[in-house]
Image 1 (tube, rainbow, N blue to C red):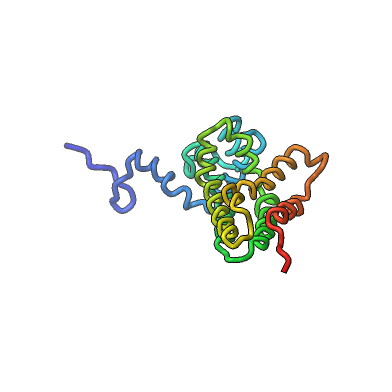
Image 2: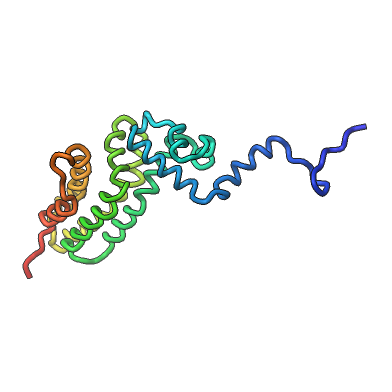
Length: 223
């Protein structure tokens, strides 16, 4: 006579081994609020200290205070973790720049707002470390550079070009500047690279430099 299936509790069939093993993966992220953010914060510390190539998920897990397997509940692999770090850190800034670019205000006002926003929301936060990482690691890992360009840089350039084209149409800036929105962002890149290398010798006042840069590009016209 064939044996009846084993049951537990009120006559329910005991889950199979494969189903039991899958259950923690499905329920894990929802069961531990904030764990994903903890892992991302630890990843930023490790990537900043070691670079992308030399960072190990074991080290990220140790810094985050979790088992290595916990990382895989949230991220497929190290590259996915890095990309989610970039996306999560910089997407809000992209949205802010797009919103500023949509505002119909004089370009010199926007220039000052951009300078203040860069100092407050990029340079004086860990977002600076993410950008520095991309500058350092992009040439070695083209797929990361492509991701950064697609998810962040191209959107920033599109928003910047739109506001410069409107300013050019109003006669506030040269049409050449609208062709090269990278010029507007160049002072921010210089600030990140300069202070990363030379801050202990000759620190920059980043917000003041950004405002000086914007004043040169977008001088206020006399009334």
